[in-house]
Length: 330
Image (cartoon, rainbow, N blue to C red; front, side, top):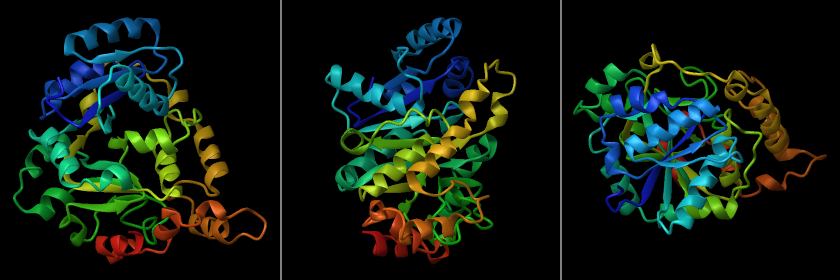
């Protein structure tokens, strides 16, 4: 069921089918029966595939299973292909990580309303993401706080970033978190890379501008897409009052088959450096210097960053607030 919505939900599953019954559908405050849900299997074991087939049938999930899908990036294109083949006309694919759930009963309506109320995003925005609490029990309480600053700011993470001045320092450490209060007074603000835990992708722009890179199987997979979009001049948004919970502790006791080679692959970071010229991560103390050299090199082609969103973000200070970003970027 999709109830006339302009988006679908996507999960990319590698051996974690028990999470649907024991986490996603158990803890979500929003009803997944009110939205179209697609699952793309990512090279699961034969045993897990059989479990997954039964789980998807039980919950009415559209299941896509093929040996050719080996990464989270490929799951996006598989979902798009499925929608196209079945003549399902939706503009956005909303990706969820398995340990992330909506914390608002009207969550799907809020996504719909944002898409309808802001038609500019269809042609200008590559991705938009939710605001994520890091503790489920706290989220149940804080998400109902009538004070919007408390509701949107308290122990939440909205996005990740490396390039904006100040974001690599405390208290941010590469996250759009614990920001100055004026950020949380806005409905949305521009970010480098929306929080991958719950992030929507623009189907039209995805097909037109994004080249799938299978090196990014798990680590940095949405960040690569975010930077491809920004090189083309498309920016990304974090929605301050679209609230989800990401709580690792709720997974305790769930029998999960963990593939560490899939989850933590250093090749992703090597590939990111090859493509963009700098090492991802707040621990890289030379990051801004590396990007500066990439912009001003006499020995390399610097044209990829001409008119890019990255170049504009580099000249913005995170402590100056969200309005400064809009004035400079748009």
